[in-house]
Length: 338
Image (tube, rainbow, N blue to C red; front, side):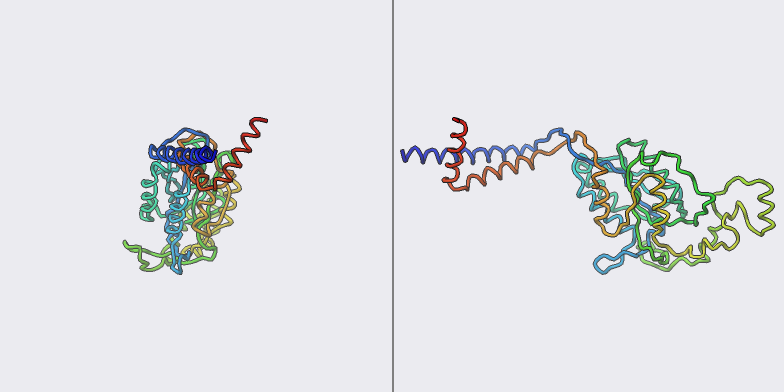
């Protein structure tokens, strides 16, 4: 009788070790399966205009530019994205958004995505102007064409250069909320000088007001009648060539840059996007992992975590005292016979 009980105990422990070993061996095969899971599809658009070089973030007591802070946040977000998620990368400057990386699965192409983000630079800008509303509208239009389920994340300080005139602002032609996503406002609301950088990103000076005032001669002109143009000449204004007028107050601080939350919140409301202020490097990951942004779809799923958990469970049961295991099996046998 004693020998039989001992044999029974050894049988249970032996089976637990056997199952754990089989499961662990299965992990070596790297099993995958297409299973429904929550994933995220994002088009990340990063503003690389010169105002993003303003160093009004602090990281470990060191000043960090808005661009560097945003890049660090994007790289953190990529590490937290679940496998099966896709990310596209795009840059904004002047009026347009340029897609530089088509949607890639984050786990299979993490190295390429991370390296690309690390290499993004303000020198990639193809123009000095920054028409934020045009950029956001263009980003939404492009995102919709790439994938109906793709979300757009637009990271910018909202700096309009040259300063926007309400009379020339474009109208949003899309349907608000049709494309989900968020606008992340980068920087401090308090305005700071816009730095000039050398080829090593060292500050060599700051833009002076006289250097940027010439942008007042540019604008988004509208068609005017001869009577309007004649009236503006009489009033000593410059009409189409200078939509802000002579010595406009709108460009009095054009050499300074601060987070324009009012403009970005207005654009978010107009387009149906969410607005958040980027206050921590984890803010980008938090925005990208919002429940309202996830998509349920079949995706390639690594089964090793599940198998590993099962193996740990078997080994845990192996170390449970035999008396408890005996009671469990006796209870189970009693319930089955009943």
